[in-house]
Length: 333
Ligand code: BEZ
Image (cartoon, rainbow, N blue to C red; front, side, top):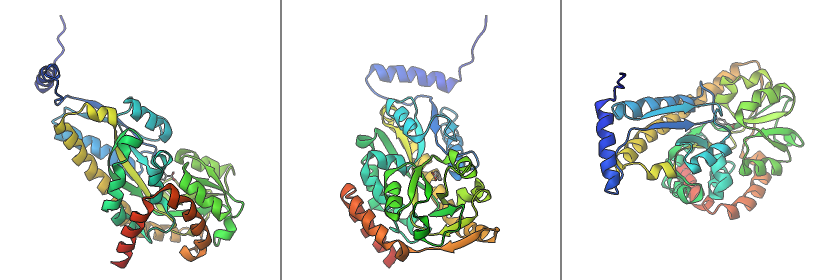
């Protein structure tokens, strides 16, 4: 006869779980969670997801495991959000893009030149105004927002030389698929072409797009500069990420597990912000040292586009006021 060894703590938990369920309560239960994200294995977001998985396993004495699925293995972000809504997926690290498609207030985080640099972006994402937005996620998307991470400030990398926004007119310009950035490039006069991150290298290589909206880190680690060697350093937008847990899954968790997941995931999301902040200047230097053409643009060169963008989004995203105020305080400080 074969015996299957069940760890004592798991056995104990399953007995206490059954007892608590009979009594109508929710108690700790060993779980195998799945966490999805679109970034490839070397990306900081994926590293943070793996570190979170390791730490949650350790802190729960081996009870909870998290399998991380990077590089869109579970589908694109829209598909992952659907899986989170049904509870088929437990957790995800998502760009705010997909949130803003469902809760337009999140679009305010993509206001062009809302912040001047990565330090202000980090501080704004840690502000009460940004945290308050997360309260809309359970009702609006069916997920619980644990906290923000981010990628670097947005720049434009192009196959042909670009000295400023006028040179982008009519260009097929790759964007992450979401409305605020689509509207931004529409008012700039470009032809925004939505394309998720994993398809970008090939699209540049085969000429499907003329230019891409991207951050220093991805340009370097995914080697986009091999396919387009003109960089317009514009810092025109920040690029937040959010760590979420499925609302359905969340309701099944004990208070103890909720708190453990919340504090552990938050730590690793914070470390993503710290790492991007710490490396931004050095990555700019690395790109400047490559054999590529660099030009620079600032807010004044986009002023008409910003005015048009704000006329669309100040109505769609009322949170723009409180975020602008919080950002203004950071600029004054
Ligand atoms: C992008 O779509 O450009 C992107 C997504 C996730 C991380 C970095 C960049």
